[in-house]
Amino acid sequence: MVKWFAGPSNVKANICMAHRYLYYVEGTSVVSDEKYDALEKEALVTADKDHPLFQVGSSSAESYHQKIIQGAKVLLDPDGD
Image 1: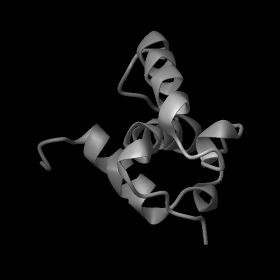
Image 2 (image 1 turned 90 degrees about the horizontal axis):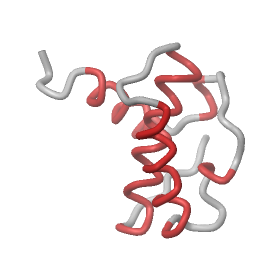
Image 3 (image 1 turned 135 degrees about the vertical axis):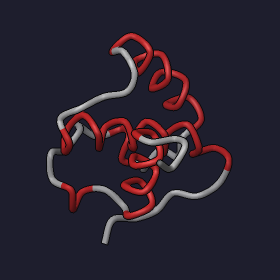
Image 4 (image 1 turned 90 degrees about the vertical axis):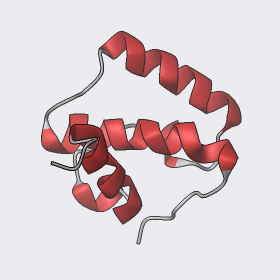
């Protein structure tokens, strides 16, 4: 099981991971590369040092916690339609 990183210091990192899931696993994105890079830069400042954001992105769905996958679905359909 992939570890879940809770807490306010990891919110932006978890959002980045949801974007990574969309990009690497689903082959889509909802933000520009520039916007993602800016978000990741901010997230790396506050994230726990063992957060997976510090690792290379993965194309394996098993590399992402279920909460990250759920967050990615919200990014794709924020209104829940």
